[in-house]
Length: 289
Image 1 (tube, helix red, strand yellow):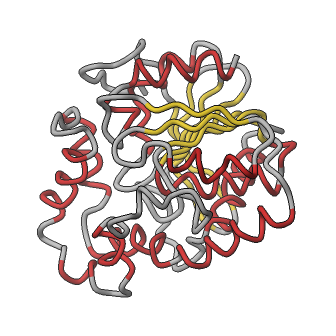
Image 2 (image 1 turned 180 degrees about the vertical axis):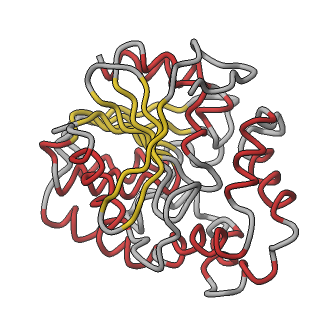
């Protein structure tokens, strides 16, 4: 099926195939496009695979693009558990296996960053190059400036079991719109993308699954700490920051990475692939090449 075009698209609209793929006892909804070496795109909150619609066309000219909805999110199975970084990393590795890919370039943002990092740490032969954006990696040192005023307010709300999914139903659109507007410095996203995101997080069960990622953050942080204590990040890695994370992720990774390049995109909100797709592709194209 063709992906609807979006205002500000950075490349041609690709032909996208949507499929259900069984991995680790759950079904992932997966969009694929193009041919060539695989590139795996890993979204965060409050996104689905449609986060990548403005960059998929360009990437699909040279790659087989694989963009899943993560466990519990979008049209993927509403799993009861398994929202820690290592379990989600295993989901993604099993997805590559199911699609016949022995390795992939991996591009991740927000909540997708810890699983992508753990993929590269635990199975470095499976990850050719790694692009990580706008996230922190557990409690690794280096994010002090970003966290000087405390973590973002929603981390606390989302972390309390049962609370946010009890009070938000009926107001999902307003809640998601806040993140989409803040994440693009007030510009907002295309109507098609916005409607897809709002629909994906509608209802208490959809919200619960999203917030389970935040509730699993202490477990994921422990997994990240153990990973850097036992190995170095050997995969060539690019960090891309914007507002508000900036260089915090790069600073966290610098002591642990053998081959790290860091960039910050100025005048860009947190949702980089939708706010500044051309700027992102300008960094990603040469890095993957």
